[in-house]
Length: 377
Image 1: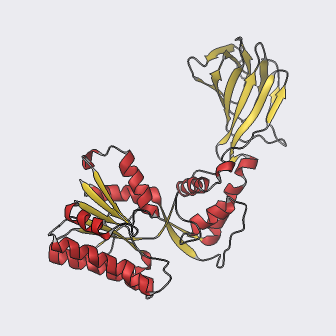
Image 2 (image 1 turned 90 degrees about the vertical axis):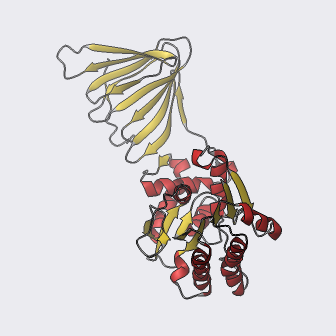
């Protein structure tokens, strides 16, 4: 399949092109990509339009210096594509990303509606199958900040400890994630486009409706996670926002130090805190060292040895015989030992090198209620 992508240097196109170049998509093989941006030669575009099997029309103007550029960049450029296809009798399908603002009576909205109508006319005259998507606010990696995306703008500034501006906290916006847009485009290429409820439009799913104040609060919660180690609750929406926020971190801020609590036995380091999923820590034991010798009322844990070897020992306080359970763990054969509440437990390094244990606990450690009761196993 020969695919032409317009607006090739734009946000959506960059993501799409990398996916198409990186994935072995059997339904597209062999694949040839034609890419066009306004900085490229128009003669190249004319050549592509004679040979392409599918057009993904992502080009458009949304922040011009003059209002007339809306008409030229949206309707005018789309009409040029349609005229070339008709001239060369190319009946390939064409997907165009329009905007939810096409319903508005302003220069931008009118120009996007006019571009949509150009494609409808193409379908009637030339038989090209058309896929019209009125996209809401799209967010994700590589979106240009301080341009037309509030998510990109706020993520960029918060990641640099700069203030963000909000004029109407109650204003609601509809958002969709770049990966979901790319997935829908791939579905469309396979003839599996998602039909919208109205007219001849198609849609990207899912979308999220939220107030600007809610969006701001979520993004602010990411700001100090490197200091307090708290990872966000991974709802579907927050997961996508968090991935987006991380993509705007300055490169010098991609790494950060953890606090190691060291003594003669080794070290203990908290890695991540998760409000609803507990915490992850790293426990290092020198050879011959035993740690633990305690039990919990409700807290439960999972142990995995990732370096060295040793024993995890448990006794169920409820059993009258207090039977000793011993599990030998080694990095050569990784396995998990569950530590239920009500079990005395300890871990011992039986090897000749440091033993490194990854520990997940179902709750973040609370100094006011540690739920830890010491007793020899």
